Image (cartoon, rainbow, N blue to C red):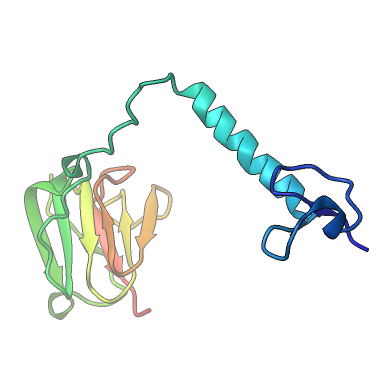
Length: 158
């Protein structure tokens, strides 16, 4: 006969009937550790937050970076983080697939959106050299701040 735990938490009872438990109130003993863990977490949470303290407010929507304007089929590059500053757009019809496309001299990207439908690798060097930093961004990705200034890119077949 399995052990049961009463709704009040007592254990060691070999039959539910001897403890006065009905089908609606009996719990297998295996649930006792789970219930104890839930109670411990609730007690810890209550101890950490002082009585009467308000729950922390959720971050306002303005704390999330606002996505920049970038149409489907485009690669959009901004010269400042957070999709700010001058925006440059590139479409598949204007670039060669799997070819290095350097940005104009003196121009670099600090944030980007890839909506080309293909993966795009952004390079730190203007020559798409793999000796510098480079990261491939899957289609549909938005990067409000890149790890380095992008100076060239390649759009891949897939």
